[in-house]
Length: 227
Image 1: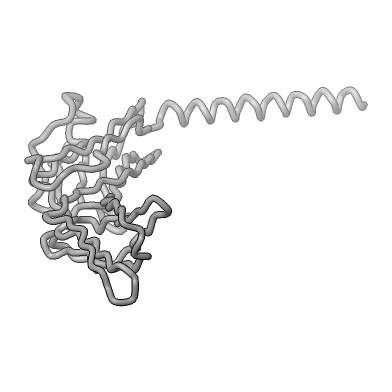
Image 2 (image 1 turned 120 degrees about the horizontal axis):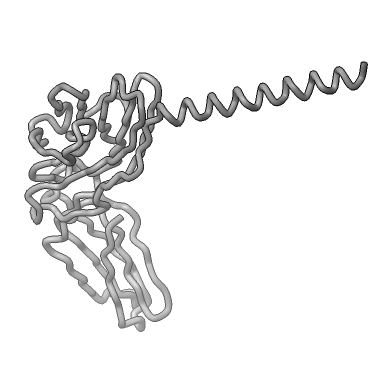
């Protein structure tokens, strides 16, 4: 009796294992998977005429309902959508700024997967999420892109005061995004925290702060880095 129960239990276990394997294989056969997302980490404003954000993926037997969507900063609404067999659409902040004729592949199921953004400006800096989905599966990847503007003027001014201290002004004008400013002496470094209001126009950005240092510390090094 015990042996019969053990044999029956073993048969059920084997059946469950086989069903799990078949279910896994079925999902693999119908899966869509992003294999590579290419988004430039940082580009300089005004240097490139266009920038390409690519999202390559693999697909298997069932591609019914295949859709490629790109989201900017959040997943509330896409800024780009391509439904296979239809024309791609640009929306939101990217409306009118995407080359909709650009083809990333000759594969009809991958043809319009990428974004070619014309004349990238600082307002499109942020996280980009690519979502590829079918009626069966969905996959997504996210990467950040920063469009930066170098400073138009960077200066270090030193003035003596009446109380045996020195007044040091380190200023960077026109930089975007707001950079980290560090004023260093041989003894230590002084980090200037974010003091810039967030504005879209890079030419309106300026960072200025004053540090009071002991007068005998006469060697100063100013560093400007992107945040």
